[in-house]
Length: 267
Image (tube, rainbow, N blue to C red; front, side, top):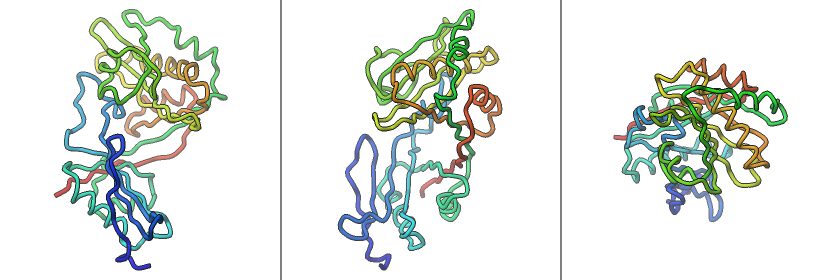
């Protein structure tokens, strides 16, 4: 089928996500693109650290393999650029994939690399995990919260909400000055047995106290208590953060894949 016969259509926003589809025929989707707000919680932001730039949104773009090399991805990207008021796109793609080649061809700038690691609960030594959680950290206290990540864009705001059923589990370390470290996991629906962990993130000036290990162990323990259907935790770590990579290895995470971060400033 000719690329000219494929229509790019806008689909209704859902939960803050703008979307476009490449329709090859009624009911046949050849590709899709979407935008969603960047939540600073997912990028390790703490109160004294810079927030994500306000004009940035996260781009997802996919073309079905049988429809690739027909210009569909380029047309979807052009539709995104024409319709969005945000002028800065951020994309995360699997290293060495067609998505990475697409970013390189379309002027995206590579800004970083991430390693994705996976922990399965069958590999967790629960008694040892409990010992890590029970270790005292003088001057610090653990706090836990459950609810919806959509309730706030900063961890300290989440902690002001009372806990309730929701898609997120948070373990945080606090001192008299407030929040100093956290780890949070985003949980999908009941069929999804894998969750995504963000952090741990530790405020500068409180590093070297074992707080990252403390909140991570507490999160792993509490997550299974609240969501017993969860069997796996996937954590993302910047490859320029050897300390955090070592922490995940210590907890039993194993390598899963690598992704690259790309950014594009729209004209």
